[in-house]
Image 1 (tube, rainbow, N blue to C red):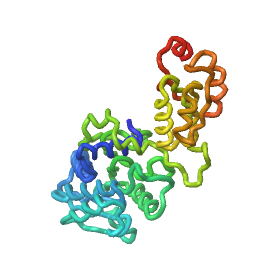
Image 2 (image 1 turned 30 degrees about the vertical axis):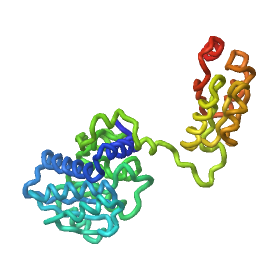
Image 3 (image 1 turned 180 degrees about the vertical axis):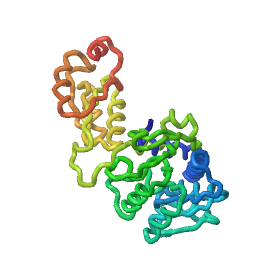
Image 4 (image 1 turned 30 degrees about the horizontal axis):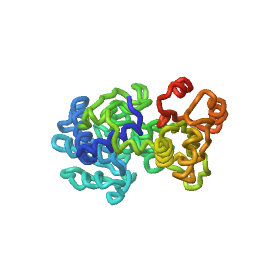
Length: 316
């Protein structure tokens, strides 16, 4: 099971290995078509693919293209064809052939009534908050149709009060957090071409995990860190401090032996430096350090402290 954010991290890291969003979309849409074919058949069937404007909709467009080779496929766009949010979805719309295109709600009830199978590609893991129009109306129509429904990755509206109730959900790469047979129907996990090594590496995708500070935030709202470091080495606590500031933490306290404190403070005026008593971290410093901890959210300890016996005893 994987969270939506973790999935976005994997997508970004896959690009580092040369696997583009377009590649992932092609694999996802083809897999959706294969599941629809194996679960419900496709030859001669009337298939309605409901597509949103993002990459989930793009997956649906790829599925429509593959199913159109044997089924009568109609694509119902939630909005007009010039309103796709991503270039990959737009590219796959332009690749469609021998597919009827409808846009908006004008003929949605009629199209849903005429279909043998519905494919829900309206909204994916990137959607947030309650459903807005036209998606809310489309979801109600889909749920009231009595037709078999295949949802792409997650049911549209997943995690909200109004969501598609699918017969089958095609989970891309892995089941998404919170999805069960009760809300996702039969869950089919499919491979979309993300190499196994991507799941164990740290790459550019991890930057998505860093919170983005609000423009109106006050100092301390984005994290308060205590760094216990330095003594024999003065650069180590500064490097930890700069790294912390770089990921958005805005209050960095550094507790360092007095012999290093002046040098550490000189690296940046943003560091709040607390000189300890001696030249190395010792047991006598623990009371001062403990008094600092209520001011912070997290503590980092170790860099540049050295391995003197008194320091190791204090750490223990």
